[in-house]
Length: 273
Length: 278
Image 1 (tube, rainbow over the protein chains, first blue to last red):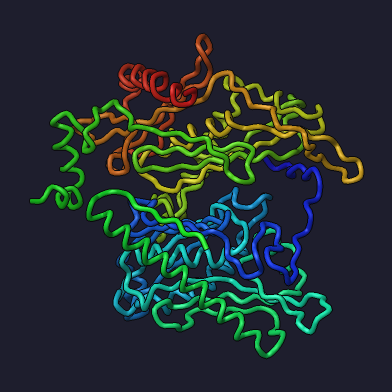
Image 2 (image 1 turned 45 degrees about the horizontal axis):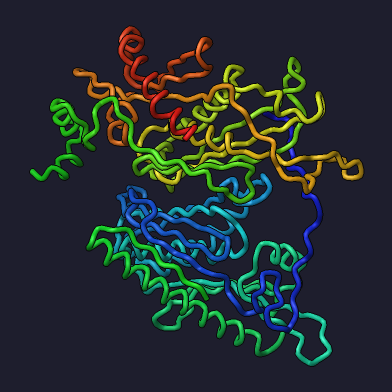
């Protein structure tokens, strides 16, 4: 089936997302700082050692942990263990049939760097842990959704980690304004918002992963410039609030799963922010 | 020895003892399938979708409609359906060999399912015509396995057919300035009609000396045996039955036709057809 095909064009162009300083001005009624509703569940894949499903708004990520397993290659090259992270977009996760390979590699690179420091690999000598993640729907915030799904799956698998870590994505932009304040801080963009603002380069992104018991940052990836001296402080402060809240829900979810496994029944929690 | 430990350490012996007693490890008779649950909830970005649960297996199939030119010169009004199956590392299936060249079971399975779904006795592809010789619907069915517990052929095909039967194609008009077809705001009502749903029934032939044929094998039963699939296309009067063997030990053709076909027909009618309709 080599002939080129295309998806029929949409009936009309949807309105571009808007942002301003007012409350509840974004297209889904959120304020600039609001994060979408979150839902998480452990154990959807029963044959994996640990698995988790994480949903934020319409973005859905599913992750499974297999292992640790022996690896001759790992045994030869290093005395500690290794973590293999594999990420895929489901074919229907995005509207058009484009190749996501480059994006997948980019995300895997960042996630691998983060989780190598979080999972205590020296306790899994000569072994490899396989973590896979599949994005079932992409409506913005994929990196943090996958990060959270993997973190929850690893915790569900009982892997030795430094802490329960959660991630979120924050953005700041200059917007024209009559007052002296012209920088807007945004949390959790949808796909339409990302398409509108990120590609033009006007927006500064910061993806932050925080260990929720202490306040240490275990993952930080920024693009763009910090627009004023207090920008970093604002973004990191808000990131900590969001990450802690997600971390609290994760702990509740894991406790519920553990209690349920003692009673042999399925468990699930839903959280709204 | 603890039975679970024995099952892990000596899987072939464990299975043999269970089967000699007349039951499978999960308690089913040899010719029974597992309970299946089909949901046709709508996936995003898809014209039709289906989720199939069978035991601990979970498959998600999404159909996306795109527009292309007809590729078959003999049938300028025929659209086409392309099925792709995906067994990634997430589902736990070992269809990829880390140490060597990757096995092409996914590719082989995708091609087989594509042929079955496009078969002229199963479906009239001219229903996918938009403008003869210029534009037809090309339906891409993506089946993703989220959890794998045996039976790699029946379940993706059931999920694909269920998703296709659930499709609602939008009304499109040609936009001369964009030189492409555009969806209109009219309600999408065009469905995909199957003359008869293509289904296949898979067995695993385990334990060479005793040779038990187990329908709808679980993963451990499949790993210990050779898979054989019987594919059905076409309704009463024009049924075509095709056996498909997926590698492994040789099978006895006479036994296949004599013993398996009646069982396969029964499973097709009582279980799979009922699942797709109900």
